[in-house]
Length: 127
Image (cartoon, rainbow, N blue to C red; front, side, top):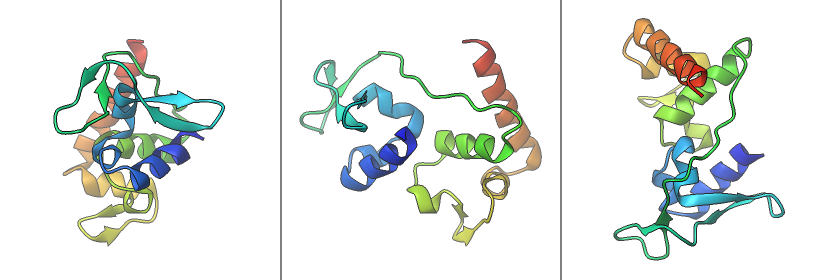
């Protein structure tokens, strides 16, 4: 639900369109009742963006089980790419079918892709 709302927020808000999925909690809060993101009302004002506030509050990005390979690749893309939903699979103008292929195209080498996955896994262990 939050992922769909994230894509909707990016379509409707030029500032949000510049954010990665993991950066959204810094500037927006999740509203359960409306199932949407709302701008923070307190915090440090963001230069050049009236009415937008930055907070150092910790947001929550849901974890993905290692057996859900395509979901892991989607998470990697969401943490690395600031494109809209349909563009996540497009790398250098080429549409990649699965998210795994998009990750492999995005990262310069397969080793770099595995390094990113390992880093993501380690960050989950530190929680």
